[in-house]
Length: 607
Image (cartoon, rainbow, N blue to C red; front, top):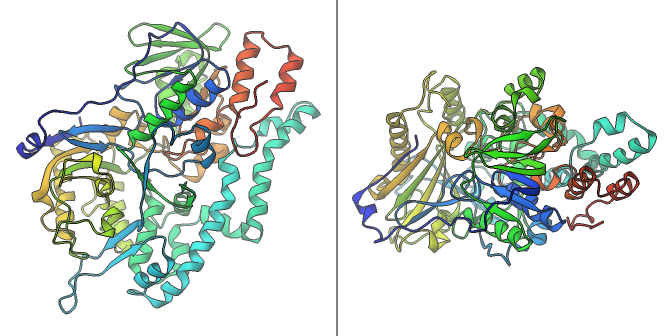
């Protein structure tokens, strides 16, 4: 189990515990048009909000006591509110942000600038502090910072950023649409093929945007990121800092093929109209889920917590008929959408007799490996870094950043990766520290802070055996020892901590293997192959059962696009429901199915 401990100082921090916001609503009905398994923000965003807007009566069934899946805020230590799993917001497509009126429903985001801070573990020269590298939106300041290590790199950096932004921008058409309908394009009548050919347009738009950069794009999605970075730069601190974004959340090395795509995916994001930006949500990541749930409810969706789905109901005709909860309650629907991982959906929730042995074997081969142990820490004072001293205890610009520790050289990252591949937690783990309470005072008592430590690399099993509480505590102690070397006094400031090893991320949040992306973001599990070639269009072998979580295209964590694309569009799901209830003639169905979303806005066109 996860280790969550706090000291007596933590128990005295506040006089009363806060409460976790739960869904309040009427009793579950016995019949809906659509049921969504899992209250993660991806499905809250689309299935409960967009579908309900499209006239599809929708209910969300969340297993836990709190909505949001991995995007939740929880008070683990009294008085301290943590983004317990996911901890930063980006990749939230602008039209979704706008369509669901998330600001109106309470979403507030604190933008970070600067956004990256990498202190060196070294002796200062002539009494000066150790060096550090700080990066933000100010290009001139970035060049000044990089120039401390290499003037050549400082000069090359602006061109590198422009190059990455061009490649990342070209991918947006692919993120905003389902993958190409290969069966539709290659089989059936000419009319059906022509209709399916429209799904080729995002690839065409992507290619047109790339132009002469198509070879560069191919290289960055297939090559080790080190091949790219070594061509552009020479200074280790800069290369290693950029390389961390190529391995974050992934059991891979910067020297492994395909790591370049993970870096590119981090540049794709957009927040408050700022490209590549990542921010803190007020109140923690649960604030995203709360706003999306509020939007969905405003359109009439029913959202329930503590409703643990035991199995998808499959009728004699082989189609999904609804779900049965673990308490025996049956809820019927015409469509079921699963925000669970592909493994949970097909190995635990779907009757195995309804699936072919070949399909089950393919699901077993999906890679869910995760390197992540998340440690949430409550502290009674701000960390004071040797490389950027703040003796007065007031936050400096670097405190709002993603703080990269043990990241001053790629050799350190590679050694950490190899430890985990040999079945052991890293001896010198890669650490990404964030302190959101620096910008958001609602998270901790006055003078105190919440610290997130996203650590790599840790295996799911330690040399073939299960994690014990002693293992968790020992690893957290090791992490704190490393933090202490960069920021002396950190260990003495700790009020409490919550340790989530890969098995805990699986058990608590339903993340198979502890993988935050619902499956590896490797090239063999992207686009037409996410999570399997036979599932890339979100439809499962069970008629009426769809995947809609991060395990489907385009993947990643708080991205909200997987659900928005589900089943081609909410319109198609609605037509599917109407067709099964014989509300539309075949001719009317065919005429309506040509209706799509309105441009990039995502606004529904009602038939």
